[in-house]
Length: 328
Length: 291
Image (cartoon, rainbow over all chains, first blue to last red):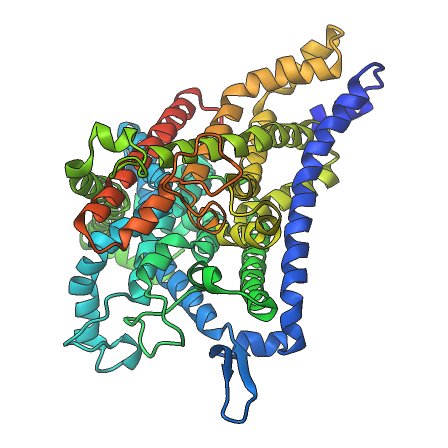
C-alpha cells in the first residue's frame, strides 16, 4: 500500500498531474485548517474568563453563579466546572462499567463461538444500534426506560446499598425523576455497539493458529480464550473501551433529556446532575454577556481537550495494530 | 499458564474429576458469552418495538404532508429541513472529504499521512455540542439563526467521516490495479479517478451514507443554530429552519398528549430513515467485504 504511494510520488509526469495533486492536497488541508479554526476560536472566546478566574479554579470550583448583586453592591460572579466535570466523569464511568463487560464478552461470543450464520447477523444488529439517533434514545429513556430503571435497578441498588454507601442512596418516598445513574445506563446502551465492533475486529486479528496450538495441547476453548486470545488482543480491547469512553463523554442530547440538569455535585448517583455537554445545551440559549459566554466556551474547551486526550490515548494504545475503524 | 507441576500431577492422578471440572467451566463460560451477546442486541429490539408502539397511533399521511403553520399536527417542514440541511452539508464536505481521503491514501508521504490521520481522529472525536457552540458563537452572529449556520456545524461533524472512509477503502484497492493502469500510460490523475477511486466507489458511497445518517440525527448543534420553525422552509436557508430532531426534542417534554405523540411519530420516521440507510450500506459491505 505504501508501495503504491511511493510510485506515485516518483512519477514525473507532465500535464495536469501536479494540479490534480494540489487539489486533493487542498481537500486534506481543509480538515486541518477546520480543526485549527475551531480550536482557535474555542481558546479565543474562552479567554475573557481567565481575567476574572484562573483555569485551575474554573476546573475545581463546584459553584456556578452568574452575577448576583450582593448587599454591599458588589457583584458575585463564580464560574466552576467541577459539577459538570463530575457528572461527565460519573455518567461515562457508569456507562463503561456496564458496556465494557457485556460488549467484550459479547464480541468474544461472536468471534469464538457463534456459528457464522449467527455471528454475521448478530454483529450486524449490534452495529445497527449505533445508527439510531441519540435524540431517539433520549425520547425512549424519557418516555419509558427511565421509569423502568427507577423502579428496578435503582430501587434495588438504593435499598441494598443505600444504607452503607450514601452515594448510592435515595429518598425512598420520592425517588428522583431524573438521575446521573440513568444517564449513565442510557450511555452504556449507546456505546455498546462501538465496543462490540472494535473488540470484534481485534479478536478476529488474533491468528487462528495460536488458538489451535493451545487447544491442541489439551486446553479447552475457554482456557484458550483466557490464556491466549484475550492477552493477545488486550491492547485492542483497551482501545475499544477508550474509544467508547470518548463517545460517552461528548454525548449531549440523550443525556440532557434524562440527567435532570441540576447544578452542584449531588450527594448520590441516584440524584439529578449535569454533564459538561448537557450544561451547555441547556443553558446556552439564556446566556448573554461576554464573561458568561466565555465561561460556556470554556466548558466546551474543557470537553474538547478531554476528547482530544482520549483520542491521543486511543492512538497510542492502538499504534501496534494496523488500523481501527473509528467510524461506526 | 495455570498448569503448575502440582496441578499436572493432580490431573494425572485423577483425570476424571479434573477434566470434568474444566469441561464444566468451559460450558459455563460459553453460556456467559452467549448471554452477553444476547444482551448486546436486546436494546435494539426493545427500542424499535417501543418507539413503534408509541408512534403508530399518531402516525398518519396528514402528519407527514402538513406544515405545522397550516395545519397541526404536521412535520413536513421538519422532514424537508432535515433533508436539505444534510444535503447542503454533504454537498460541501463530500467532495472535500473524498479529495482529502484520496490524497492521504495515494499521495501523502507517510509523515503527512500520519498527521492527517491524527487530525481526522481528533475531528471524529469532536463532541457535537462543541461543533454546535462553535457555530453558535462564530457563525450565528454573521449568518443569524439559519439553515446556513446549521449546515456548517453539520459539515464540521461529517467531513472527518467521509475523509476517513474514503482513505480506508482507497487503501484496500490492490496496488497491481494502479500499476496496470500506469503501465498502459494512463496519467496519474486519470488512474486515480477512473481506476482506483472507481474500484473503491462502493466504500466511498458507504462513507457518504454513514455521514448522511449521522447528520440527520444530530440534535444539539441544530438547536443552537437552526432553532426550529413552524413555517414552510423549503430552500429557505437564510432563516430559522425546522428539523426532525428539533421536533422530537421540543415535543418530548410537552405536557399535552398530542405533542408527545408527535414527538414519537417523528422519532419513528427519523429512526426508520436512519436504519434504512444503515441497513442498505452495511448489508452491502457484508456481501462485498470492502470497508
